[in-house]
Length: 504
Image 1: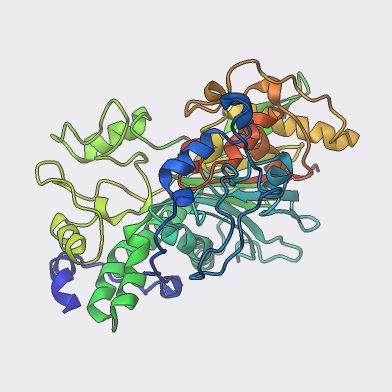
Image 2: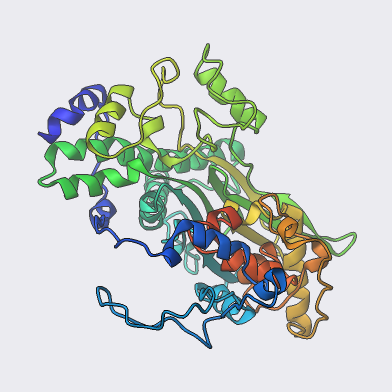
């Protein structure tokens, strides 16, 4: 019986929360693809990936012919039909990515949204670009009327978030649907129980702000408790194996998350971060009239000294809890995540789930001593928005793997200038680097400011274009054209939101 697999866990957990409805929507497919041909093999795809955008005839001589798919396209057959096409060798028919393909990929999932009058937000731009198939990143934006300021004309609070899933998209999909409601509900209860709370005017401003921050932290932790504990407990009452797996899925996978919470009535921005997504504020330096960079979060991993100290303090005597070379906590890069139950459940529960539900194999008994090793409690920053042209960038680590905070702010400043002048597609094309393509698309690739261009009306898409090559079209085509699963070595899933606060 299912209950017998999780009995050790049920005994050890006294937490009880309402089930997560979104988990019921998750499903799994066990359909297997047919046997792969030569052209579907990993070896073949690896070779074509390395040659994307490079004329093969130039490399191998006149005796070799490269087909781009237009002159000799592969015969189209339905699944299971017998191939009756030509047997003449026409070269590799996987088409090289062109700039037309890149442009279509860049605009596939993007949006521009406008703030309501008086909301303190002019507009926000969003984009999501997959490397995994399907994409494991998610994003959310929402307006919620909270009871803190019931006076006439009070503006709803604004929420924006990006979620970087891993080991599948179950956890990030749940966060997209559930995190804002959990936080908003907790804040509503706080303000209803203490209707006189006024963070901005209170003589005990710091104490009142601590109450709001603690409420947000509790909402994050409550949701993660339900993902971890209720997901496993659901196995006891699930009627079918598939129902059990759908309940368990968000705890088997995981996700980093960053959620920004803006109170337009007081121009207060709070940013809650779990993991290595990142928030950055760009604001004008009045002395120079240039934008400066103000971090709204810090990456939470073993290279963050305060995080490493926290983890070691919580697990005294476990000298190998963090690997000093790669910054990982028992193999996991971020120190704060939603889900990832294999780093949170008691070891005996992990063993049972590994045996019966395709979970990861738990760490050895000599390493996995005092779980949980990861937490979903966020680190929260509070910032006063002056409404003098500030903007905020929220992005998953796929963007920050390629550029610094300062470079991202510089790119948005360039975009704002182009928008002001209307000069989006009249800039000279940067001179292509003379460095070999292999070096320019290596795993350690970082953006080059000489390749920065402003070509997109959507600022989030503008950031992604420049993160993946900018004006170096050869690199851009190669990086974007890399197909799954090789694409994970070329780029990560990238999700970006850029929020422009209006001027007073």
